[in-house]
Image 1 (cartoon, one colour):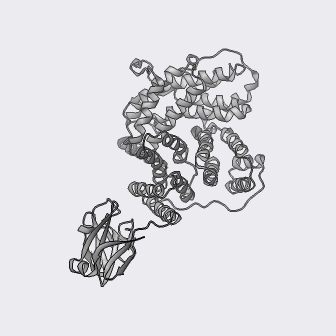
Image 2 (tube, rainbow, N blue to C red):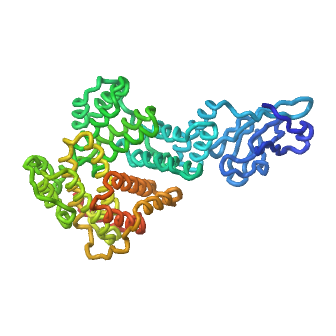
Image 3 (cartoon, rainbow, N blue to C red):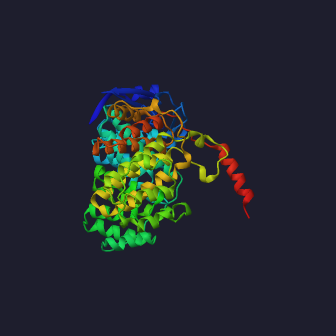
Length: 523
């Protein structure tokens, strides 16, 4: 669609440059090196007018605000990252016409995704936002940018899945609730930015090629014995041959709960992987599940650490079927071994009763976390405990409830691992503090209000913002499943305290002292 600019070649040559405006567009016409160029007048960096730029040799135009330089012949950024858009030019009887037609949608898609890869590589949030907005302007769902980010950077995650993947499902759910297109784009950008943050400067760690016929038992055995290549090949076989996703996720859930794996992250990741694929579509299945498999293979098995070794013995004794009624108060103040024994004492009780008691105790711990522990600078490394050591008890519980709903034989593992969460935090609470001021009158309204803050949270570290959204969605989900649960008020108050208490995120002095102590003890 060529449009007349009303500007003649001779007039442009006389002035050097002119701005043509049409339907909200600003196009800069420049006569340079015997040629006529038409480019977008807004610098792709921050939108300043290129008409105020400086022209140099070889048809190079410099934006004077931040020194970005563009080759007028190609539009490429010679200094800077984002190219400037060029428009085709025709001369008709000495008058300049330019082609204002948008490129085909598929071409726009390809260009935006290619540029998005570069934006992620540089961890440039503004650029990520522009390319995602361009995708949506071209008629594509911005969720495509999330899928692209996960796929493009998938082999940059050395140990597989991180919170970037796990929180993505919740950010997408928040996007569906967004009151405006601006908030929706904000929510979509969160997981993209988190992927960029987690892979900044990372080299590639390719996944093995090949496929094996799906065998759930062989898959579990490969993960158990840390044979990533075999587990990946079995997963690829499942995806290639249409094995039901639920069957694959069940196998992954069994693998996640085979151990007290990675401080409970493995179970959380299984739940969130299924939700993420559900929201992004089947094209996201391979990158998401590959990263999940890698994380399961690499996961720590914390029940092998001395303080958690009672777990295996307790699991072996589960069938004794203790029948003592249980509630949250029974777990408060118990050590790891004490929490395991108390859980065993009620192993014959209804699962929901034990679950509610353990979740209530986890809520009490979160509400009574001693923030002086987090602020201290003389801690031993083993005592580097923060809010996140407490919040995972809820997200883990939420995950295992879903996993065990289709595989009830996993409940003994799940409940005993919940007991480990409760017992491990015993030493880091302050029971005597006044917590009454954190009471929540209307939990539904509280969650809604806190969710709204996530659209403009102002938190630099993605790991902190993602825990906020994961916790809020977990609480909402748990309350929906059991609106009369006995831990309801306690967990709501604990969540309020956590969300509204400033957190110390940089421990420079503690880090230095621990390093000195470590080095002094070497050898």
